[in-house]
Amino acid sequence: MTEPPPPGHAVGSSGSLGRSSGEADRVLLEGTGLVCRYKGATRDAIRHVSVRVGPASVCALIGPNGSGKSTLVKLLAGSLAPDSGSVSYEGVPLSQWSPRDLARRLAVVPQSEHVPFPMTVRSLVSMGRYPHLGPWRRERPEDAQAIAVALSRCGLEAFADRPFQTLSGGEQQRTRIARALAQQPKVLVVDEPTAALDMRYEMAIFRLLRALADDDRVAVLIVTHNLNLATRFGDRILLLKDGAETAEGPPAEVVTAANISRAYDWPVTVATQSFREGKAPQVAPG
Amino acid sequence: MSRIVVLGLLLGLAAASALFALGVGAAPVGFADAVAVAFGEGEPAQRAVVLGIRLPRVLLALLVGGALAAAGAVFQALLRNPLADPYVLGVSSGAALGAVGMMVFGAGAFAVGVEAGALAGALVAMVVVLRVALAAGRTLDTRVLLLAGVVVGAFFNAVILLLLTMEADAETFRSAVFWTMGSLARADLAEIAGLALFLGPCLLALGLLSRPLDLVAAGEETAGYLGVPVHRIKLAGYLVASLAVAVSVSVAGVIGFVGLIVPHAVRMLWGADHRLLLPASVLAGGAFLVLADTAARTVAAPAELPTGVVTALIGVPLFAVLLVRSSK
Image (tube, rainbow over all chains, first blue to last red; front, side, top):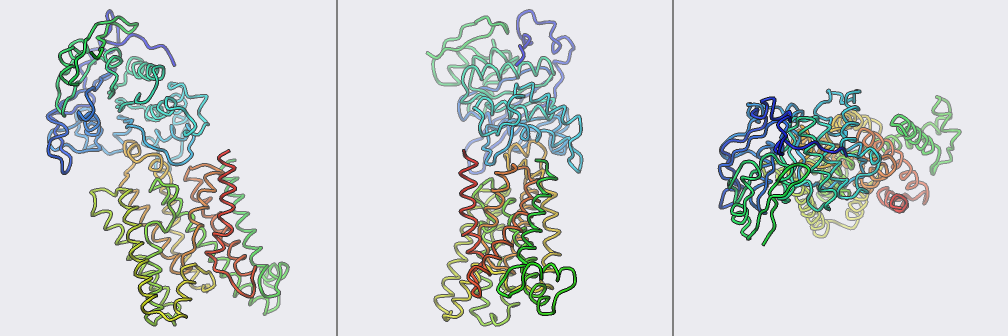
């Protein structure tokens, strides 16, 4: 995988495209005043949450188990309809987008799904082209090109013809991200991509997502339990607790000892550390 | 191997097994005679055996085997379950109940009555299972559908046993058991033509679903995010595959294992891409059932074994070998 350039929020990164072009204020995917309650539940899974995701940035969604992160992802992805509030892509409500048109712009990598049949990495990644194909679904040169780029971006060239089932957890997760990249999306939503991955794979995936934002101007929304990588690679952090937005903003403002202790109901200390990506608050549980 | 090569190979296999099946049987009409008949020659008696007795069975086996294998592949993909077969959603139990009901209540004297009963039963089962599954949730939940199919099937089977124990005499009991094991002996050419006219469009429609089926099989949620209208694809797939199974079963009875084993074998050999899997399953399923049926009518001739028993006796060991080899 390629070395990522410094992220937008890092010290001295004013030259970063996302910040200098004035595009940082542009919003691609926006959820406003979202409320959602599951059938039979006694309380709302999501309570008046608003999210905005813009190009060339990484937004990290954090919060304890059951805080509503995955529900929020489903709302933003359009697979779940909010009870009130609305989600729009480029200002147009999701309900007015055809699934295919939306899938050419918005890619979602849900938490891992079991693949019950033998499929190669290449065939799974090629599924990302589905929304781009014509009625006869024949692959054109640009489809092959997009698949090749997605495979190489995720460091999967050597695995392309291997059965998905024979890959390690980290390689499987990269395959799922590659499938989303083959969609050539402007917004990429990834739900806990590093769950059950070791440190090295975790770093590789965060670096990849950061690079997608910086090099390809993709708007990345990542759900994660790794607070320290969220602060290090994210431009903005959204902290959820009990379905409500507890704090939102740059990592240094959101990830404070007070906010995190309250949200997770566990004492923590927070110290700022310097990384290649810049300074970032790091959380240590007490 | 490319798709064209695989399909060409399987087409050759289906043709070869059909030719083989035309040339063997209880009557002393061999290969050479069958070829002669095929070219419009041969004695009238030979023509009667080849065209009147063997050909309908071969054609029926090709059709039913192909339809069951394709339906099995579709069910496995939609239910995302390698254990699924064409009968897992209760269609066969409904058909069996319809057929047995006709036998028990007297219409069994007419073959058409049994077939009509079977078709009606299969359609009722289909509708009941889909209604139950749709009533349980806004969208068609695969796990609910599977449960509904199993439960409705079990209910129908219980009714069959009740009918047989309370109402049936020994002869009816025997023919009911035979029916449920499947047989290709009953078909005539007109009926086969009707079946072909129905199954052709069904198989074409399933073929049009192949790319969305790939995506759904790999994960429903992701398929939705890739722009696949998952609910509509599932509904269409279940309906068309179930209809194909319903008409096949009403003519041939419940022939097992073709729809389970053939799609698996094709996947093990050539992968899970439905653009290849579906046509390959049709050809391989047809060839397999032709051979199994030929064995059923020849190994113990002049007695005949139930075709559904032979498909299991041949299919299961063959499948076990493939399974062991592919997991090495």
